[in-house]
Image (cartoon, rainbow over all chains, first blue to last red; front, side, top):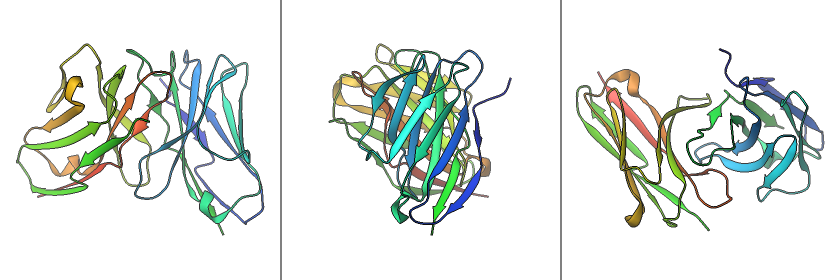
Length: 115
Length: 111
């Protein structure tokens, strides 16, 4: 079975540009979450979507947005990129969103470098 | 606000040694706790999930325990191998919040 797939794997952008990251969840999983992991830190929550609706949003500026499509795949968009947005962006899927006995399964991430 | 702390930040052990990684959290009202493994530059691999009503979970050489009342969890790795070298992350879910992660413990197992 395919796991969580993310694209692209690596990306280099310039300050002020916009970027779109993509995620396909495990088949049958209806919840997708996005996390940002800066080097040496644990992942920080950005968004959660369940059944195409936003269920949670972390402490990130409005430059960050996301959506979930009818096939449960998801996109994360970041506008007006800053150097501090350089990080590993992780997508996770789960059946119900991670509560109770519904573990999160993570993809390999997209490494974004902003120059 | 839930905060998760992992001690030590880094650990180096000889092959074959048994070891314990520690995780503590400030809000004991959790739904579950997950331990993950992360190889350099890679995503997270789920190792064990402990529900709030459970005390421990085992998978192969790994054993995770949970003491919810004291806000602590430990990950025990038996007979460590060089292939166990990675960063180990602890994360909890409480209330309507998503996973909150610690900063991880970077483990090196020396052959």
